[in-house]
Length: 159
Image (cartoon, rainbow, N blue to C red; front, side, top):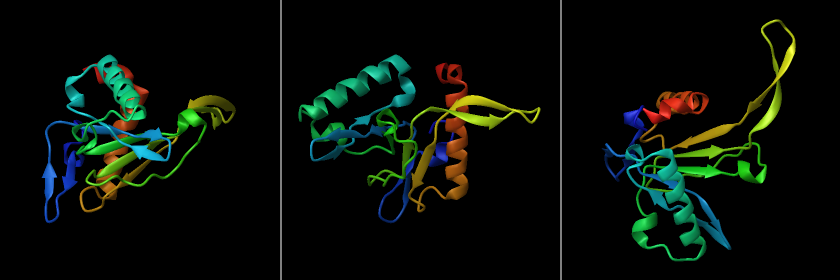
């Protein structure tokens, strides 16, 4: 969202609200439902800090100890069914957020090599759902391209 600032926005009844900070919700499965606690100011945190906060929020969610401020707001949601072996899926946006990235399982897949042969690579599928009042197809493609670059070159996330 920092690399594609136009996507760091939400629809607010009659206008688009744009944000400097990236507040990202993470889907947490509960008995009988789902909740999306929000990690705030993600761009200011290390990957280690984000991971620790995500684990803490998920634990508190499962214990039903979240406060409304823990799950209200946010610009985008991250949902990972890949950890359950789901290869790909389409997810529904959680308003007021404008996008949801559905992350599927990483798996070894055959890929054609430059010499016409076959080699195997580890790949995962992601699907981006967007509120088109805020993020149209071209902007969504730009956001996915930025995500792809970040995942393929994670050292760039440290900068």
